[in-house]
Image (cartoon, rainbow, N blue to C red; front, side):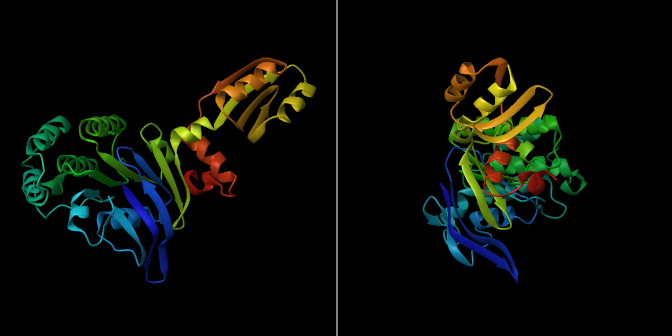
Length: 301
């Protein structure tokens, strides 16, 4: 488990991370979401041991990330702009990482290179941004570390490649218990992959919750009431987070368990009603608006 305990980090007068505390569970995909400058990259760098917090601590399986070599060997950090040696080829990077990570899997490395269509002898300097991202991910997966820390992993990858990377994460999680931590400024990128999500804003954590837990406690319902009186009576019994009306069609985001909400609408006077799936974006909008934040402005605007 990766744990931040009252961690803070400043660069000059800029507070990048302010007294942040939360946990990233093992064998879950943790999504770290926030705008540029929210502190995502700084948190990942502290977890990787690249930076030390000014205050508080970052723990990897109970070990201090900044002081323990064993803790650092359990993490592979992929920055937003991956670094490779000048004039190096993928083969050169394989030799380097093989010397750093004692569990580095060369067979896996070359298998993924072939799968992604990357030439092991071609100069990395000539690769596109997307190809460099792919190579960095291959190096990270092949290192066989417990934690893979990814900063804007999917930026620069086409939709087909994104799905391919997500499939690789799923395979490695099932095969050896990989824990990916993915930082992104885009909610939609993490829609179908994350188990737990933390929302950062201006260096602080606004929200850290299990996605299934959030989904169970909030529902989206569309309906047409038999009368406006019936609409008023039913709405008074709901815990409404958001409400829209177009003509006679109401759309509600309400708090409550699915069975509870369905039972209430079954008793109401409606021409029809249905429970709709909620997107990650809608869940975050409802969760953060309660705290006075406009997530649409923070992340989508």
